[in-house]
Image 1 (tube, rainbow, N blue to C red):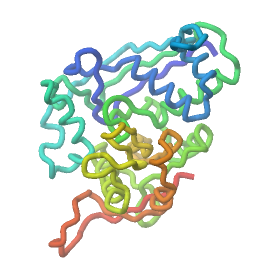
Image 2: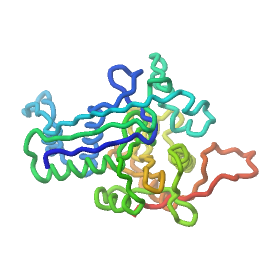
Image 3: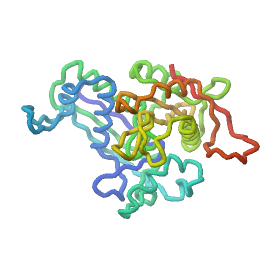
Image 4: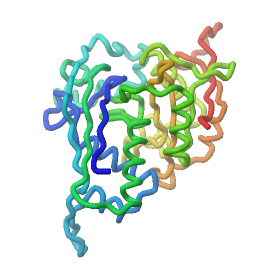
Length: 316
């Protein structure tokens, strides 16, 4: 196989930028970084990763710099820049919990990401192309292709990509059954869940906002039941921490666009965590976890709770 190519369309807002942080854009380095991350998560060794993606020389080491054997290119870019009024307006608005960091990060440097052209709206599209400069060992080529396919299935781009932002879909949408089959084939070692109704059917949403609201509700429920990064983001947790040595979340929120509609999905990669952040109790909590959407803070004055009852189910 000499090349790979696919047409992609954003399905949730994407906060991605280059040198000019006020201008959102789809960038090859961001995509390369995500493919490299998937290659590692799916079992690639450091030597294999270096052969595929290249590497730099380090002080005290004999290894010479190595160029990447994979050439990535983005073209036919159709950007649709989002408007500020399309995003959560206040701290109590639906989705403000997921969008908060994207809204405030950079403001001190006069980088207001909510403003146009700071983010790309759903419907923005581009073509992604990969070609190979040199021969790759068959095992590394096979793993790169699987990383590519898993990235297209569950990947995302930009700021807060672990929280459902920057998600995309290929033009040819799978059915729920086909999505299940692809997950079993490509990443069987990664545990995944989907939001379901109480009657066990997948909770199919009509738009990305509805799907994100259910993901936000799950995340809020998890934080209220023993998994918090602390008031200042300083506690080791599978959900990550933002101070005292930043740790990315190992729990990923991902709306997936199927032929049936938008399906809210979670997947978990504990191997990226420092040992003190790992907690097997999280998986036990998520299995068949009941919750209610939309998310809201606990309030002792609530006498009636009329939110929808849903459940998190393992994607088998």
